[in-house]
Length: 97
Image (tube, rainbow, N blue to C red; front, side, top):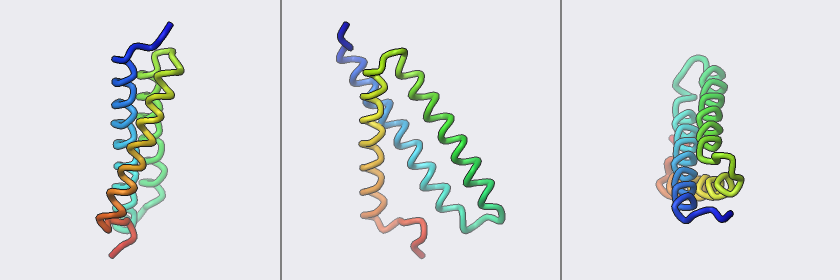
């Protein structure tokens, strides 16, 4: 049975949304690390929260079909490339002063 075009489009855009969420909150976490007293709590807590939400999102969009997961992962990677280029081009690196 073929996967419909509707599910391909939805899976791709959900993957992009998950990628923007994951890498956007990772960037925010890195921004706050120098400003707090216990950076290890923010680092580990942020990692587990980001990972749990992202994996749950992939699980929901997958719906038992590996094709949807693969398409969502493609969107996730597109979001990573976009944010990496966008943040680097703007000079907004976490360690820049």
